[in-house]
Image (tube, rainbow, N blue to C red; front, side, top):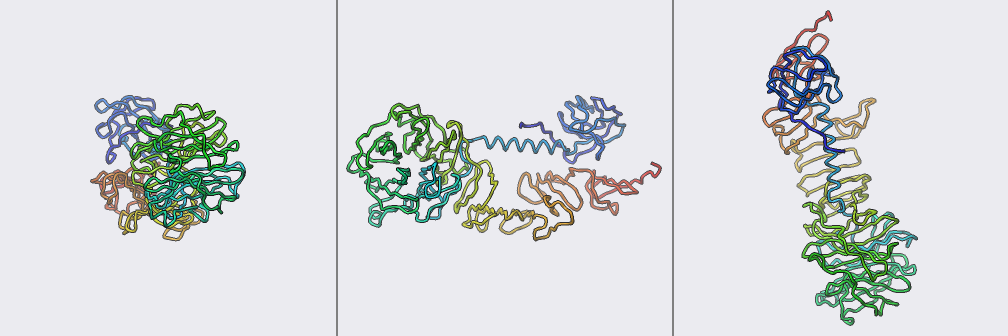
Length: 581
């Protein structure tokens, strides 16, 4: 798809006329007043109704149109007599070009910032904020606790670590997530809270059929401990165990990422100096293989902070966010032997869209590889301070595409959407409202703000808080309760209203420039330039009952006896038909 040429309009579609007859192959057209037609290149219509011909001209020489293409846009080229009208009407070509160019622009917007997820995933949190961070996702070959997809994460509403307690969710597809009953899995005791203790950095993995959740406890004085809980079904967990006391080891562990392989616990982490470290243990309590990885911990002034690792056909594959101030990017590297590593490559950056949910910092992310497809679950914070988890994927880790198909999305806090929103199978969506209802979409800015609501496909309404004139437009499905009912044998896929007004420039009253309006009673499509309404179609269905009937200059109609022409606003003339024809 590509952009197609569009042509300027002429206000009020003034009509000129041919000053000489033309054949059906003539490439120059002489008119009485070429100033009534837009500058070249442009299109014009010769004649009216279904017999009209659209032409394209590439030049104007005085009152002569030159470089004329005949029978443009599917109309038939024909010979025309002197005196036939020529005008710049709104044509089928204009409508088709507009539609194609809008679609082309939309497709390009989808590609822009393609690696960033259009919207975050909906991951419910025990505190009700549905804001979270630090994901670790498992995709298992064999179901565990009845599910193959598992996620550990921590709620983080507006960056409040009081709620940053390890939580677990499960899924059937890796997109729609359900929190287990019993979140959080752990939280600081009253005594721990009293000394500034908080939890963070949860990470799950499977060891011999048992799920282990490792997570971090820290205080404001940098007393850091790594705890563990285990579960045989993902919902019932053991008491916490102290696995690593950093005060004893002399090294703080940040964001530990673990696997269990070859009867060994293998752990990668960031230390207090922001170096990327590795260690291993037989039992998880005693660690004796600590070493610094040969991977740069600083890239372009950004320093390594939180990482994840997954074992694949390529060996060990890593993602790690590097941060600088309030910004952060995500990098990828891999290693066959965990000794030699590829050069880290940036795979994801914050969105540049000022309204995007992930336009602040890319944070801790989780990498899985399913078949030949990479899936990166990344946490991010927007410039509004809100934290969510999104999904981006692709067969090439350096060419990811963010998700846009959302099965369930609910936020009690503001959500900003990037480049539109695609919701093919909506269960519920609520933004700025705590209500979640099946088959209903609500976009609210507050009790006194604007509302867009779609309920069961029966009604779409765009309302301001007062429902005042020009602030209230509703489209109801034919057959639904309301003013519009279904006539016999009418295709119910067609939506009809008594009056539709589309404001293409500003939200305002009917006198605003840029409004296109269609009156279903008079069957007139009109455009307002800020001063007057101008018709976009010339034929009207209703016959005037008097010379002063309501009418727009240039419209016409007919009945069995007369041809009626509106030659000025609300001024009609009629000509009797020749009965000898």
